[in-house]
Image (cartoon, rainbow, N blue to C red; front, side, top):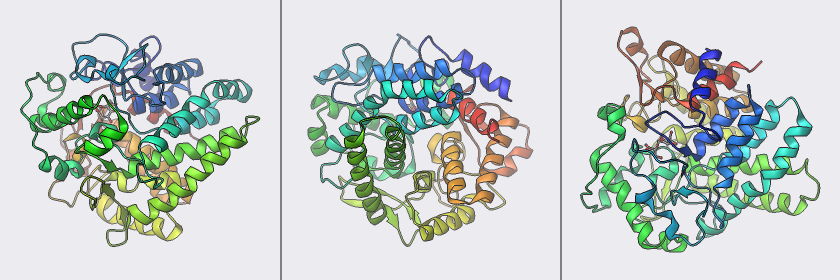
Length: 433
Ligand code: 2M8
């Protein structure tokens, strides 16, 4: 399994960065890049560093790190740089074409992972010193521009910023939108069966939100006022909090960092308190989403509802409730951990992208968090489930959570093949003692 994972990462390497999956995703994606660097670090630290440096090189002058960096031309993906027109923003990267939105800010905790994995702590610390301020600047951008009510929680303005693109959570937002019918040719469905991808109507909404952002030249304050999609997402905020914590730990190893540590701690305290106050739902015993445009909570349980375990956000009581919920509703004897959407809901679709399938990056985060809290048994089950489905099906993008399907001969793995973060994170799990 290890050698296959390395082979995939080698094949997906493109002279400075890794594509998530050939043809389906032919550019550099922000959070994919971070997860991939963790895998690369196990066999080629130079490449792991290069992956992160390339990503950070595309940072905008205002601190935003874009969600896609279009390093090369490709006609296998839509929408490309010409649709996004991110150069409408005066502080967009002049060096690279990119989208005008971001993705979960993984880079902080990824640097800490590189430090953990590296055998040469002096050399890796030297590297971290050379890039860490860019990551800090990214967090500063988020708190200054994505938190209009100064709550300590940042918003996302597009479902693509969440990383969980077509989660049923966004349905109520799209129902409120009156998006036009765009004329475009889908490219994703040339590579993957349409039943495993978002619908055409959903793409109309995705494109419409971008059109609105373009109308305001990607200005954050105007987006906060006018975007039909404005959400405090538990996953995005979890990742930011986890990365804050990593930056604090790493800055402690770097001289003259007191001011930044102080600021990070301020962000962190405020964020964790507000997160628990606003996003923990006592009745559902899970973290939920907040729709800032409608000014109300979206009470849905997804794998993101458990993600705060990764950043030590829940109290002991909350983590007990969360794990009971996870085991009762998402595990039982019938499902592999962890479905991306509540398997007991009528909208659960075990094959369709973020509406049900298991994703390795979410499993990896849950595994790490549960272990830290001392839930060794559930953590081990997540690791075992992850390795079992990949072993049986291959390094796919997402997997069917229904165990009984695995007794049948047809494929239970969906989306892109030879998927980079699946390979990278499986490699990380396999390299653990
Ligand atoms: C998926 O999203 C892209 C748009 O960003 C797409 O469907 O075209 C998501 O799973 C996202 O989380 C991921 O980063 C990206 C590349 O793997 O693919």
